[in-house]
Image 1 (spheres, one colour):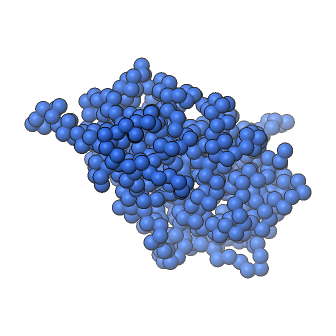
Image 2: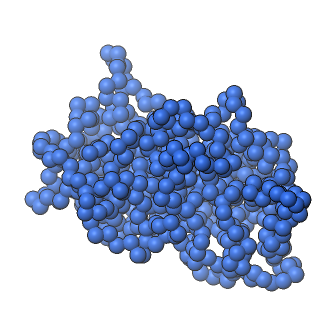
Image 3: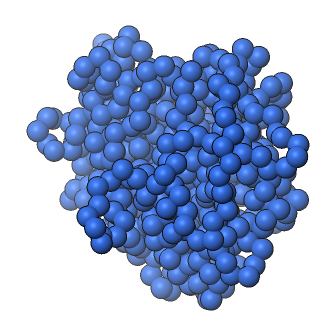
Length: 579
């Protein structure tokens, strides 16, 4: 059995990719975190060098040292040639997102000239802990002005301003009428359920929410143990994704104007769109074909458009004119309109793969899927995919809560994963998570009162809302959080250069995405709570990461697991620095 401190003990690194790739992309990752800026940056105040030990033989020694210098930002020398320390970006880049403009993603055109650290806004405050932070956020943390807030007319505008510096969302206590609850129940009833508490019985465990507004539906679905992922296009102000993430909900920037979403075929049980401003029958139906690609067999497409309310003509005529072009095309891709109520329409994707052979017309055609190309921002397709996949399993035929042992064995087989390797990975992560908690407890709660003889205080279950696993492997860290009943969700990232295990992760009911770590991640600054970065790798790789951490003013310590290997663990903390 491998030591829990070895290869898989890392929020950032699972099974290690080639060293050359790691060293190249590690530079890019830390540059992304610094986020590239303009020449108007402001330098940090100089920091006096204080010699301190940076390598500890075990995490107990690290904990003892951390209690002393937790709040002290230190710099250190790694080699004779010191790396240049980065300064702060200008104020105009407080919400900067590389690669994106208001239209689409253009990483290939992004060529920054100078690197700098994105500063938080002047009024930025540490978010409230979950679940309070789900319902109340600091207005200074997001780019949403009072005028934008007051002028919003979306269905999810069930908000109120408590005071000058806070935005409050209606809680789930039922004391205040919340249209989202009624809407969620309506959707459940339209697909034949008694209430939205029964979504799992219909096979609905994951929902892609397109254009999620203020995240109200996602917040409600979380309470129903359904995993929502919000995607919305980049917005310079009033970002839906930024608001959802600030509330601690799963979200990322994304659109499919011209390229596929970075998810495998047959990924989601339900796709939801309300007032998402998409002309679905445009581009010869390619937007609907993309939704068909990511929907699982038997999955649901929910479209709500309150803007279609009639004015001057009959309600039925207005609704039919809106839905007619969509309904005509959905028949060609074997979707059926199963329910319509008010402004909400629900289509269901066929569960019978033979439906495509019995269509009246062969248009759109079936894709030739001989080459298994990962759907990482590939051009939109005009053909139907997934029909030959061995993962073509109707959602109604899957286990309602989590994968059964048979389903898990089948998923591992399809992913090329040995069952023993999967089991060992799960065991390693359960142990590793406990070590993380023990490692970080005194760092976060160094001033916590403790009676003589007591063990170190345990952090509260809700000290983190979200964690990004940069190399998620099989989703073992996510599963460990669930086993420990931690109130946290994980963004499971599968690098495009690693083995594509994302279908396995998503079919476990987890949030996940493909990503190339030589590019910026599609999110806004300050959107993940895990202010600690834990790296496990060889001495050479750790030394490079440690030097780069010094450039961006991260406090860093190296832990020696003392197991006779050349592995080291680097624990970094991002400081809260404003200028």
